Amino acid sequence: MTSDVTDPSYWNDQSDGRLPALLGITVIDANPDMFRSRLAVRPDLLAPNGFLHAATIIALADTTCGFGSYANLPDGAAGFTTVELKSNFLGTARDGTIECIAIPSHIGRSTQVWDAKVTIGTSDKPIALFRCTQMVLWPTAPKA
Image (cartoon, rainbow, N blue to C red; front, side, top):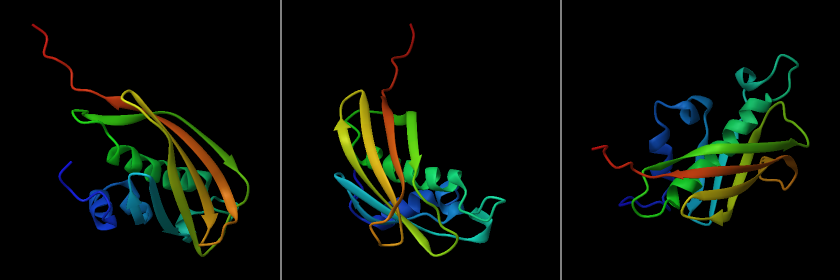
């Protein structure tokens, strides 16, 4: 990868016109060993019960882990895809911001495993714990 993967603006530019930008996800810290992102809680991200929709939290965590996976792809890999994810919800929010910190637990040639914690703002109060497994995709050889 020729781009500076430690520059948050690189990742934010990748989001333009895609779901992370639509939701308002912003990368605020980026390096291959840890990604951190933020999302402002807005009324349109709430569930009908008035609390933050679980899918919003999952999108924040999966996006943050996904950027980390992309930054750690082995040379020659074509990309990656999420093959499993798990979330434990411990709390919620109605306003303010939420943040996500994602760190790799395993970086391999065929899979990566990432753990993330979503907190209320910059506090250490977790509202969700998240783990995902990413499968590294390799180019396929043309069939003869």
